[in-house]
Amino acid sequence: MRPESTMQPGRRAIYFILAGWLAVALVGCGRKLPPIPPPAPAPPPVSDLSHRVEENRLTLSWTVPAPGARGRLPVAGFTVERALLPAAQAGCADCPLDFQPVGEVDAAGRAPGSRVRFSEILTSGFRHIYRVRSFDPNRAAGEPSSHVAFTF
Image (cartoon, rainbow, N blue to C red; front, side, top):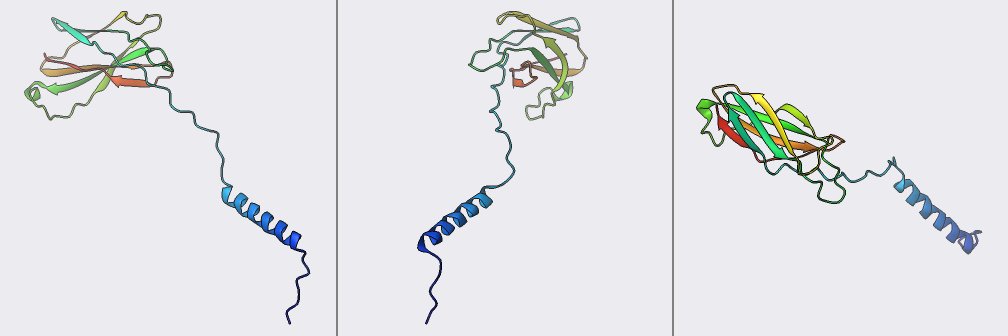
């Protein structure tokens, strides 16, 4: 004969439920971190980059873009980037372009739609390619503008 269990049927159910909760708690444990907010939208790109060369001086100009989409911060400034190729490689369409920052322009106090200018002295014997990136007050950079290119 088999000995009868001395445990009451109601207690058996309670122990079964407690064991289930314990298993769920052990599986669900882990290092909890605060939630990560979604990234803010990038600042709008410059859409009208133009250039002028006078003697050996380049002047780039563009318009301060409006913030546009909801949640975007205003533009705080611009980074001007340049890639140089030797003049002999000026026709190379597949050559990689290594853009390096060459200057920044502060946009503080400039209203959207106002013109911005950047000037620098050119180095002769090179293909010069320039583009501009806007950045917000947190220094998050936007997409690059279309580039302007010329050989000097």
